[in-house]
Length: 151
Image (tube, rainbow, N blue to C red; front, top):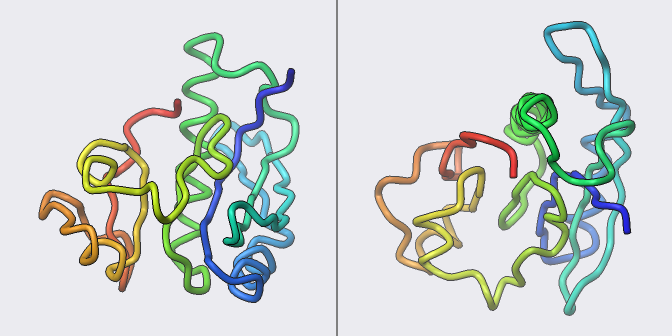
């Protein structure tokens, strides 16, 4: 079984997910060493809600098996997050291995907001779940726990 690394963005509606996917069309994550990872955006439905999924091409398909892969995926994730800062509206997002539909909107809870590095949530979700003040500003209307390391 292949393990997929992606930025998964829960948007709620199909039109919102399509808008986020369009935002990432043509996006390439280029690392400091000059290696580029073209990204493939798409949308999918899970449990009645729509997601945008952005998959960098030519990265690990077996998870994080070495320190080198962890460093590579963390760098790619940070570039994906940087692009996400200017994306159209979404409810929450996370980058990682097998991050696709990691929680439904109904499963997301305050513990997630307190503990998951790289989790970005809209102010609306943050307020609804009584999010901790320790979450930092990500972009206008969004908070997050900064990514420390890819998982």
